Length: 193
Image (cartoon, rainbow, N blue to C red; front, top):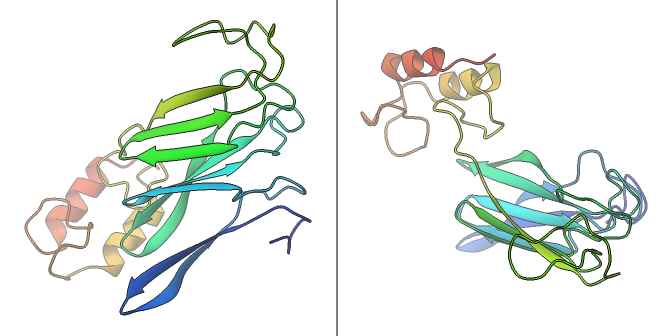
């Protein structure tokens, strides 16, 4: 997919409820030409990780991985993951995996001569030897319904849009079974703006 920038890439999310239907169309923000976003993809529950191995950030073709989070049936961007030592041509995000709150991102052309776990990733003595990086998602603050790491107006809009609904919808913060004033109090108490 290259509708915004040539070979920028995209990922499509489909859901099956009797028949398959498209649930989301995911793009890098901002999309870059030749990033190849979607060259690697992993999904686990309400999380999707998408690799863009040729994304420039901060060096040419250093690579990036993009995290997305689902709340109800809505997918939203929940952040960009970068290698701690992004080098030109490392291709971070060339392979990705997500399981619960853990993320693995491969950089097949990373240059360090580190071995095993926790070596010196800044010593670039082994050209294109490759590396894998493990990250952990930080838990979202209470009231962060859209997964952006903040409790703000977007979360308030989601809560008010579900006002009075009954059942398991992820917006019932106090677990009472209905979205009501108690949930609003929790959200406002966690407000970050």
